Length: 395
Image (tube, rainbow, N blue to C red; front, side, top):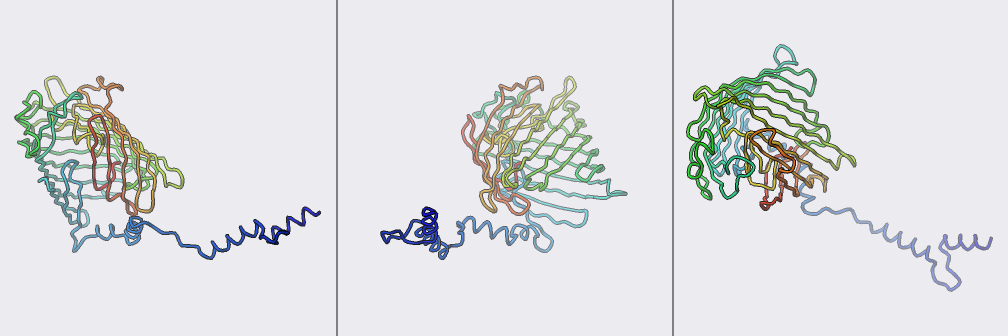
């Protein structure tokens, strides 16, 4: 009984016999002082800026454009340097033009009929002209050397019409047909020689003469991502087959098969995401035919193997795997740890697990409500480190 009375006395803040305040009373007094001096949580300058950016929807307002003209930042091609442009769009029609500081140019007209006869059918037509004066070429194959870097100019004009159907809300499939005209010239990159100074038509098929193509193909795309511009759950699975028939030289017929699968695993209330991707491109030719070097699949750079230079490897077949762990540091900024592994080969049977080139690194994703507007990736590999600054997500 005496013990219980002493405990109650201490809990009520009574003093002990020496006249000193009890420990419980001291703790209670400290709690009251802390409650009276509670400070609201503070944000760093970057946190405040990104929070303001998202709250005011500045990116969305910027993208709305001015008098029908909408801005385009970046988006030409990896390795093109900083660039931008504009597009105008009305119902079913869009025209765009883009240029970069390295002299890259891209112009496009697009007509779209999102509904043909019913909501399940669609059709579109696209005409694109590109002029890329500083494309990189290191040679063909897994054993190409970075010291052999050259540059070349790639010009092409492509007309493609597609027709398809949507069997489900997030699924579409269809066929395509079109024409592709290509041209290759001397590169303008001053830090390396032009391609013809180092390589010949044997090492770079179609270097001397470029084909013109009739294209036909089919595609299937199932996209279940919650936000395509900044996905945190769901996945996307795409398969495409394209046949290229050389109308001009009859030396460069080939078929191309593209396969890509992305998936996103969220946890902790979607503030953390594990993102994975598997992507491959395979080509096939008849006897005596070649795949032009500038149409062969490539590997390296900001879109796949981020510890290597853009287009570091190329050959007739390519496979790459990517994995990222993304987490929200605070509103408007996600951090990421990533690992990449990829390989090129002349034949699918030559792909070997032990021959994969590997890269790893850390990334920063500055995002708006539904998209990533700026991405920074610092990648490391046995050939050094590379920093990529891009507008838009990697996958």
